[in-house]
Every structure is written in structure tokens, then in C-alpha cells.
Figure 1 (spheres, rainbow, N blue to C red):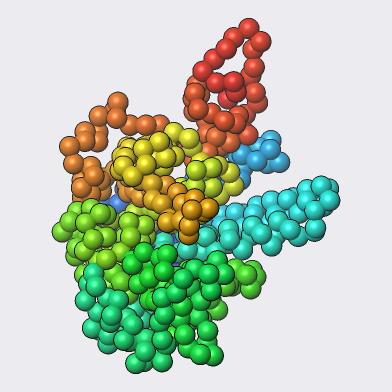
Figure 2: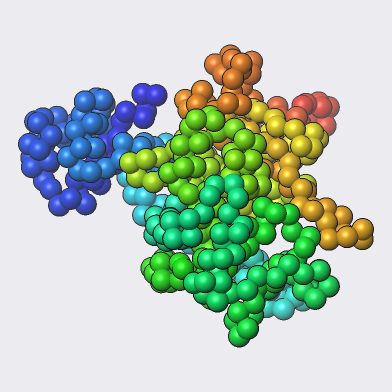
Length: 472
């Protein structure tokens, strides 16, 4: 908690962005220039009253002055400097934290450079193995870049929210039963006819839109919640095209493939915002204390759709509990990750096997909870449950994922799943890492790889908790 009140670098950046000298900013805050200088150099903590003055005078959210962004950047840098190519330079935790706090743009540039390096290395390995040059680039990079795009923006887009709210008003959509209203709106406003069809004509797709005939075909295998979502998605392509174009144009994405993936994600965002309008959904989330099942019933959406929407409630001045969201398959592959709560997801390797998200597969359909502490001391309350995508027929098995959502431990009491748990009891805290390759926890029985930043210490005559002993 003490470290969170030392916000010198953030306040200095805020002052520089406003184009103020220390004397001018100090005068506006009612403090001396020498005191502000001590604050900017982390020689004095920031008091609550001063934080309130900063928020009011400079129109900044107090949560924006937290160290969540710095912690995420530092986590990414730890992965980078743990690579065997860089580990020999001995860049330690204090230097990494200082870089993330004092020069966040430089830290982001390092992450981008390292991502490009890994891509080039993977391409070279593909060529060595006789694979077509650039295979890895085409198959992996766009998805990763698109995922980072949403993650880095805390998965909130006000322009899309506004467009969705306009459609909800014009179509007079009732919560929980919007299907007829969406169908009528699509027909009256855009001339789109909706048809529910057997899977065969769609050739494996679940949604197909023909711009020439203005016919939207949805597969009958889709559950009702998914039909509503796909119809709202199609309306979003008509109603939110301008804000989506603007967002993509300013994002400076590396490829057309990434741009397309980001557009899909933004239209999905529109669909969620139309089915779960911001203000009513946030009010219901607070009233129901983030009970995902009750929210999904109330708004007629799936468990996953409700979880996803909960991770987007970051409107300035009216935020919900900042939640991270992750979706993994049974092999541990991450297909969704968003973080409004400062949780650091591994960018360059697998996640920790001690994390509750992976355990969810052992108890299908049940909600599991966990208090997890990362190696940097940040502690989170996590909720996980499996979800299954329905099969298209006998020969196609259902697809099962594990969904995880979570928040900082200090906000856990606002969530119903924390009721009755002793969140502060040391024995209830599970020590986890970002991933084995960067985790320095010793004697972990579930370690799959040795940490890259330390040398192995293997004794032929001693069997420890793990096969990968190491020297710090």
C-alpha cells in the first residue's frame, strides 16, 4: 500500500502533459514548489486530500493515478529481460520498475521490439525446418497484435458505447427480450431480412450475410443468446462503421489482417453494448453484486457474454469494479485476455498451472474461486468456470473453454462470490506466477520449466520438489 502512494513519476508526467512548471502546478494545488519537487522524486507520499485536488483540478480519474499500468508494463519487461539473450545483462527488478514508472513509452517500445525479435526468430526457425517463409508471421502475429490492442486499451470504447445506446433507444429494445426489436429494426432501418436456416447451406458457418440481397442467415444450431448477439453484430456493421473506422485508423496496426481482427472485435463490442446497455447493466451488476448467472438471465445473454461485458465497464466517472477476463482451452491456449484490473498476463509463454482458471476443467460447470498472489506482491480475487459451445451434430464434439474473471483483492467484497471467504487469511492465498519461465518461486511442485534468468542447480543425489532446481 505504501508504494501506491508514491506517484512521483505519474504526477510529473501529468504536469508535463499540462505544460506547467513545478511552481505553477504547486500554486494551483496550494502547496509549495519544493514540496511538489519532493513528491515527484518519491521523497514524499501523496496524501488523500492532494489526490482529490489533482483529480478535480486536472480532470483526471484517481484510478488513473494507480500503479496498475506500471505493474503491467513491469511484468512484460520481466519476461523480456528473462530471455536468455538478455539475461546476461542482469537487469533486475528495481531497474525494471524504474523504467516502467519513469519512461512508460520507452518500456512499451522495448516490448514491441522484443515481439518483433521473436517474430523474426520464429520465421528463421520456420525456414530452417523447411516451412514457407513468413508462416509464423501470417498465422500468429495478427491475432497477438489484435489481442494486445484491446488489452492495452482496457477494453473500453466510448464511441462504440454511444452508437449502441442510440440503437437501443431508436429500436426501443427491452432488456432480456430484444430479438423481435432487433429483427424489426434491421428490416426497417437497413432492409436486412433475417433467416434461421439448417447448418448445411451455411457450409460450416454459423452466420452469413449477403450484402447484395441484404439477407442475414443464422444457423439454427445457435442458442437464442448467440442469435441475438450475431444479429446485433450485423447491425453494428451498419451503425458503428464510422467510429470503428476512426479507431482503426488511429491505432496504427501493422497489417490488414490485424485491422480486420480488430474490426471484428469492435463490432462484437457493439453487440455486447447493445444487448447489455452500459447504464442499466452497470446498475444491475452493482445491485446483483456481479452475480454472472443472474446477469445473464436478466439480459438474455450467455455466461461468457455477461463476463465479457463486465470487463468493459470502465466509463470515466462511472466505472464498475475493474475486472480482468481470460478464456483458455484445455491445452492452456489463451484466446481472450483483457485486463482493467492490472493483472499481468504472460505475453511470451504459458500461464501458471496453479492458477484457478486451469483447475476449472476438473469441475465442469462449477464456479471456483481463488485468492492469488503474484511474485510482485499484487493479490487478486479470481473466479473461474467452464463454458461449452454446443456441437453442430453427433460427429462434432462440443468445445469447452474455461473463463476467468477477477479483481484486485481490495475490491473483492463487492463481488458475491467472495461472500463467506476469509480473504485475508494467509493460508487461503495461493502463490502463483505469470509463467514458469519468469517465475522465481522455489520448490514449486508444478513447475514445468526452469526460470530463464537463473542457472540450473541439479544434484544427482538429491530429489527436490521440482526437477528444476536453480541458483539465484
